[in-house]
Image (cartoon, rainbow, N blue to C red; front, side):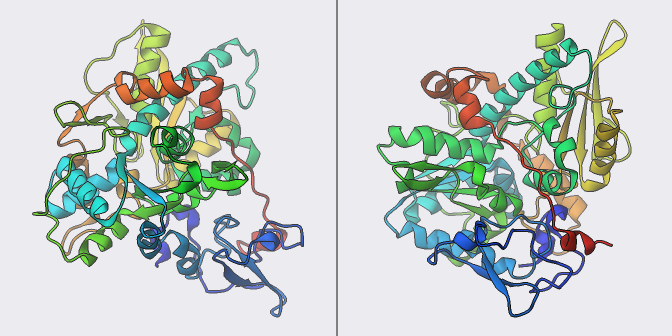
Length: 470
């Protein structure tokens, strides 16, 4: 597995199958560390440390993606979330549920020359023929995440207006939190001065994981630990997000993970091709409506924006909630330094009152971080993505065909992404309404904060780990 398939946050310039003397693993190696307490049965990778005769076993859950040991040994580390493991789990007696991201659907649609709706129905047929119980749509959980993000922004905005001084955690801007590559970078490189500005709302992947493992299992008559939940995502970093300790809980003294495994779009393509079936002509299955954005006529719906539509959705909501301005039609995002850095402004009586930005790729991200640190950021909300061009260009997506440039592929994906998907307001989503009525009560409630929000942790690197960058 090539390291180039990971986001820049997980890459190193000099990758090896071992940790060099100047690349000590930053996971504590003392006898009380998590690494020293791993169960024997857990899949492990041996990482050699200084001195050479010393070794420590570290599992994926202990990995901090510091790039000191994210090497070609990642092939071993990620075996737990491989295609082979997925197939094995189907035959293990657990109830397997698959949740598919709209970015992955778009990538497969572009590859096969199909619509997103066709791809989704064919994937449903394929997975169920293998023994999968249900196939859901993370567009539904994204709508819930957007509702929570809107509520959080309004609260933070009002709090910032009441505060006489800029206090970290109460002041603006709010930085989006759906991209695990960005979160990984922030925790390991930026530390406590930037983390309080990041939205506490979980990503759509983890929101649907929470909904399934904490709530939907009851409707299905199952125990959380009897469900094996797999997501299909455009990004390898999502595998690391899924194993964060914050997304693990206990039921009847059994450890339960909200998302048990993540398959990338490319891995699902490998699965399709391994079946030796003509995906374009294979039959389609009806969609599972419980957690899928499909209307009574069978049409898909969701928000526009290949990276989740956070900036656009929150901007429209804030304009209405704070300034009584209803924005019709597409937003006028102005390109600044490059196409991956754009801004949109709301003016009231000739005065700018809201200013949001899209910031994709680390080239742009570093400039924003510097401004936030200096207290000179002019934006109230920033949609942050580690990958240039955002999630549609994730490292786990299907690569350009022979003779096709990456730029041409991104343009095709942007066209396909909303081709047969109706644009809909998340607040009108009946699935979201039902989840709040039956489970969460209302946006920002104690239940919503417990299940749909998370926290971040600055990671302090060892001295020797930091020296590798000298």
